Length: 171
Image (cartoon, rainbow, N blue to C red):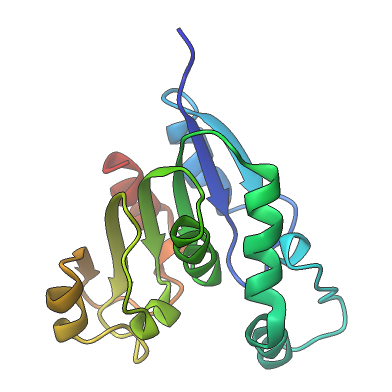
């Protein structure tokens, strides 16, 4: 039997399979055929000599749109997507533009707070309670978005093994 496909979109820092991604892939590979994407590569951003703020700026100044465009060319089948931080935002926007997403899991994707349109798929978002940029409760209610707020956690909670285990169980 063919396993469904799961796309994993990295966070702002990308990299070829950062170590923390293994917390997810080791659990999820039994259920899914996994395709990992470094969002820096999707956006054609060379971050080798850039600070975090500069990388973020590159994404805001066309990088998100470029990553969405690239992803739409690469993926044409039905998929489940797990996106971290900016990766979740890219997945959301790509899903609005035709990515055949059945389920979208966005983790610490704080830029979603600016979104007013919802992709036509099952959606679950996760945020750390102490992340100052997480959407307000009104956003979740207005858009009818299922969410989990992890108590006592900050933006990068997803790189911790115990949190990865919790999220992976819901996918």
